[in-house]
Amino acid sequence: MEFPIRAERAEDCEAISRLIAEAFGRSEEAKLVAALRTAGNLSVSLLAEDAEGRPVGHIAFSPLTLDGAPCPGLGLAPLAVAEGFRRRGIGGALVESGLAGCRRAGAKFAVVLGEPEYYGRFGFRAASGWGLGNEYQVDEPFQAVELEPGGMPRGGLVRYAPEFGQLGD
Image (tube, rainbow, N blue to C red):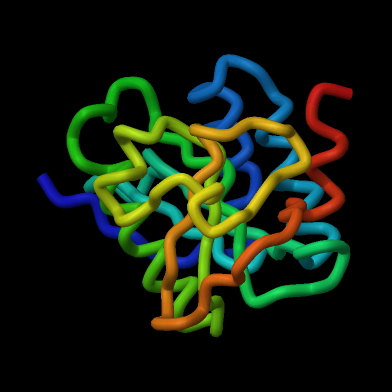
């Protein structure tokens, strides 16, 4: 079965929030996506649908700063797939489509804080290899992928959009 992927539309917001909250078993990530949207910081937001047009997966990318200044990178977070639809390739298709959307948006690199084995399949590798740090002070799970040759910065502190500071509040 195919799961079409498309850009979110205004009428999808409530369904996306429900999907994300159910996928994570809590509402914080859904609130984060809503806050990013409200602030205009939802750079790429894609939705996977089932045959009936119901959302079964979502991925979001938002702006980053490098050493406190805007940069041509985007942060992947969150990625959510409905529990009954996991292990069907939806998450992978969302990541691939999302990275393509990042390229179309002019991003030169992307970062993620996630499972290295999973994200490594899409070209992500330890961001520390480029000298990039992060505000969460984690090493191995913080990964980056170059979206354009020569587009990866060489060193600095990467920060996600300010709305990420609300996670866990």
